[in-house]
Image (cartoon, rainbow, N blue to C red; front, top):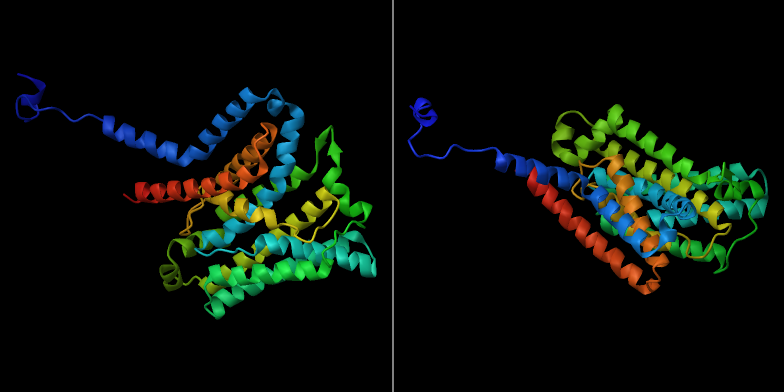
Length: 336
């Protein structure tokens, strides 16, 4: 008697195997880790074209460049996690850093006090955005777009189209300081990553953020103050953008009239590529880190391989398109 007969199966019938299940598990693993697979492939590819790319000096350069973009990506991720968006964060970065520098140039005082004043202004702008979106029920895309235009104009008016360079030595220290030959500035980004991870995974606020992004109506019915959570996310995003503005000014040793404008494209792309859903409720700090490193490696790698700069923006747009497509596939795959 065969095994098929013993189990009551029809003779000649094929016993199902686990291969489709294993294939689905493999596909799920790839979708979860696609950013890291992509990153490793690009590092190896650029390393083949240029030996300098894999040097310690270039690694340090990547870490420094990833710091400001990474801080902005963390800021952008917070509104995304609650199902909103903030396009004004790069402009907030530039304006708040200019406010700090202007206060120092006009009134003097300790550099750290004027820096904190700039961060406070950035936080207030984020809080105002959240207030408009929740209390006035403005569409976040349009409201933050308008705020971005306002802040860009305010920055141009504040600087009078000139570059601010009279920054205190203490103000620019973090941008050039090294420890054992390694730059200190990326340490700020690492600390921010750890703080964000703790916030999202081990606090009531973090769990509420995921809940609101997943289903705002159900969260409200469960007693979560949805509007307060969204306002908090926008205020925190503004605060992080203000810190990023200080780091960028310290690194560049100057504040230009279009400070931060070039980061808009990549600051939005990085968290989405890293798995933060544009629909809210999903995303991790580790994924955001992967997206930041991926885009930084692309920028540095294209520069080292002498790709014309005007192609870099086009490639960035393609990255966003691919990221949104992968995110849509993720949603459909894990919901099924």
